[in-house]
Length: 248
Ligand SMILES: *[C@@H]1O[C@H](CO)[C@@H](O)[C@H](O)[C@H]1NC(C)=O
Ligand SMILES: *[C@@H]1O[C@H](CO)[C@@H](O)[C@H](O)[C@H]1NC(C)=O
Ligand SMILES: *[C@@H]1O[C@H](CO)[C@@H](O)[C@H](O)[C@H]1NC(C)=O
Ligand SMILES: *[C@@H]1O[C@H](CO)[C@@H](O)[C@H](O)[C@H]1NC(C)=O
Ligand SMILES: *[C@@H]1O[C@H](CO)[C@@H](O)[C@H](O)[C@H]1NC(C)=O
Ligand SMILES: *[C@@H]1O[C@H](CO)[C@@H](O)[C@H](O)[C@H]1NC(C)=O
Image (tube, rainbow, N blue to C red; front, side, top):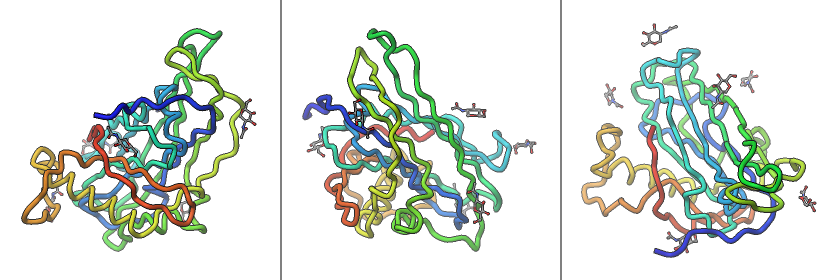
């Protein structure tokens, strides 16, 4: 195993929610949840993680609700500064038509007085989407197109130095969600990785309605992170590497 502990270099760390958005989706066996990390190595010094939940309308205990989604960003392979897509997949086939609330929170440790973590940053954002038989299929290319990228929920931080398990933050810079673009090849790779995950024997009970290829290669190294080239109009999928999946 290569060392995946990134070396510290100050810069702007940004997290963008690419999917879902304030849109209407048809029920899908693998509705993707996709976050983009810009300058991913900076997730490490601040011990960044995302918690997320999903419920129907205003009912946190509705059937199909997920209340304990966790993505430990700091544990991912953060060696590359190229934008990184972090994904989870939700089977929305059994979901009734209606409004669904996706809430997520990015948490990071901030140093105080030069010693360990003191405060922590906790964003708290909700996106409401609609499930309807007449809705659209998930389209990650459209979600990052020039006319839609500006509506992503985005958080950017100027991390100027690292402390003991925490980071020093400068004034928050403006966000730049349009710097991440998912092209057709990257989008189909994300969905193919979702299928491979769902067809893993360990996961297949969670995704009973995904059609699996007859001969499945070992998907134990398929997980929710993708390194992508930085060029805004040409993102190339460089690698699908092992990571931690917490299907909550
Ligand atoms: C981490 O990512 C880099 C660049 O994407 C890759 O070359 C390396 O093999 C990965 N390391 C591990 C342990 O997955
Ligand atoms: C969601 O989209 C609908 C329809 O386009 C729009 O009326 C509404 O204002 C949007 N809500 C938010 C929070 O952006
Ligand atoms: C929320 O969903 C649960 C499970 O179906 C149901 O028992 C409860 O009555 C619902 N609560 C509201 C406020 O609709
Ligand atoms: C699987 O598909 C059947 C038939 O459409 C549906 O009744 C069931 O709810 C689905 N289950 C899941 C977990 O998607
Ligand atoms: C986000 O804010 C809502 C409303 O203030 C609150 O109920 C919820 O617990 C918060 N979630 C997190 C993860 O902080
Ligand atoms: C980030 O902070 C550094 C150090 O204070 C500063 O030089 C730089 O201009 C800041 N960058 C942005 C984009 O605000």
